[in-house]
Length: 154
Image 1 (tube, one colour):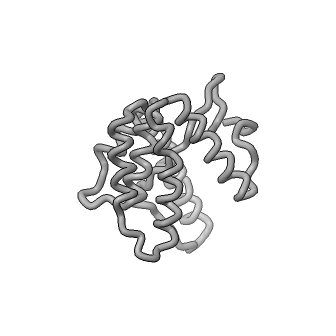
Image 2 (cartoon, rainbow, N blue to C red):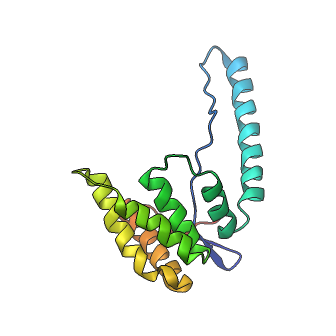
Image 3 (cartoon, rainbow, N blue to C red):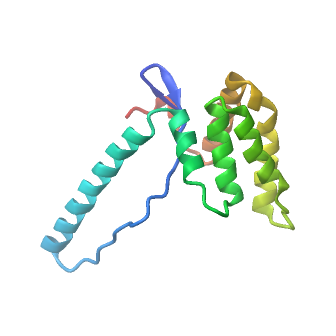
């Protein structure tokens, strides 16, 4: 969660294809490559700000860009965004798909399913779900020894 203009925001990460890398061949070449990559990053940030104006837009994006064969993580992220947007029925459908997966000894999937079970109950109550999400983010940041996001300014 990030405090911005008196409200808390949840971050969603979106993988953007086409990442560029550059070998160092010399100062001039590398400087030019870095400038081009920085300009591209600025363009992408501005596009993301236009695309992700609120959590409902994030939910819509995740639904629209859902792969034909979504992974459990795709479903989980879409479920969280839908619940935060107040779309409880869609959230429950995504969470059910995660829980229907056969973990078959996969610890990461069993852990994801345990986390999914924890967030299913508050799904129908938007404020309760926001509180669950805030607590989950704070706990993850604490375990990773990251600073409190509420203190972060952008």
